[in-house]
Structures are given as structure tokens and as C-alpha cells.
Length: 233
Image (cartoon, rainbow, N blue to C red; front, side):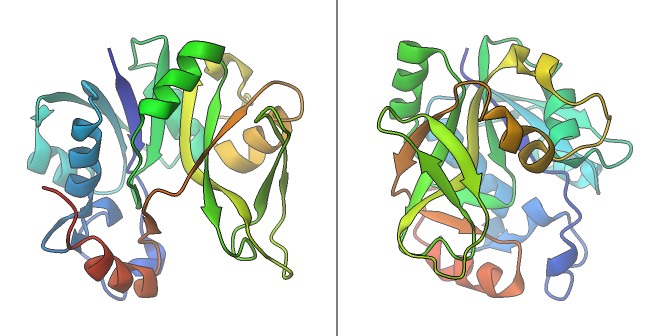
């Protein structure tokens, strides 16, 4: 079964000036809730089961989608208190039954064709970080990758920037990886786990030029209205 976790529990604090009455993944983009665009892309990629990690105004999301969307079964992992990205992933993994699972951010559109990631997992059975090629990494920080595609480390945001690879916030993880997580209930997957983990175990990169936009700021939210207006239904 092809399974994914979508992290959709954020407060959307930076978007409050333009989106104030719904959780951030339900913000209207090109006439539709943003989360619909994400789930439609997952359906096109053959996913069968989605675990929605929800928190803030969780019932708004559940009431809209119910238990099924475009042939995919939907399961809800509800945070009673904020757990951070790491805590949310750990809680959602307890709802997963597959050997491995994809993780996507509910406030980021990544128009990824997952066939290459499926093949990489089948060949190597190692965790995968989808790496986006950008012209300027200064805003994001970059990934340092060796010739075999192994991620060596995360480099901090650098004013010098330039072209390179950045973390697109999409992962393919073995469901058993939660055993490696910090003991704290609330933690950041990226800061408290991933930065150290890539230096002690193999994480592979999968480079992509897929369409990408994070709607986390008012400027990017406005840009998404045009960028995603032609996205397939």
C-alpha cells in the first residue's frame, strides 16, 4: 500500500493578516482549499492511504474531507497540544501500516512525480530526502551531497547563496525510524533529529525541479494564487 503523512496541524501565524478563520492548509488558493491541491497530486501519484496530522481547527479539515478523497482513505492523527514536526511525524507513524511512508508538509505544494522516489526506495531501502534544485540557496540553506547521492550535512543559510540543492520538506521514511527519534514528546524533525541523523546513517537525496511553493507568508500565498491556478483538478 502506498501511504503518506501530510503535516497539516500548523497555526499559520504568519498568514493571519490574510487567512484568519481556517487552518493554514485550508486557505483558499486558486478557488480551492490548498489541501485539496496537495491531495489531488497524491491521488495522481497512486497513493492509497493518507494520514492527516492535524491540530489547530482539526474539525474544519475532517468535516471537509471525511474519510475518503479521490479513492484514497483518510485517517486523522489529532494533536491535543502542538508536538512540533518531529512529534507530529512520530504520532502519525503509529497510524501507518506500510513498511515505508512518504511525508509531506501541508503548507507546501511540491508537484513531484513520485516514480523516481519509489524506485530509489526499492533499490536502496534507505530514507530519502527530496532535494529541490534552486538558483539561490541563500534563503533556505543547502544540502551537501556526495557523488553517490548520500546527504552529508545541512549547511546553514548563507548570504553568498548561489545555485544548489535545498530540502524540499518531502521525505520517504521507514516506519520503524521513530525508534531513533528524541525522547521528548515535542521536537523539530529537521533541527532536533535530521541534522544529526544524516551524519550517522545513510539518507539519500532525490534531486527534482518540480513545481514548489510554500504558502507560509502573505507574499508567497499571493504568488501561489497564480502559480497554482493551472494545477490539475
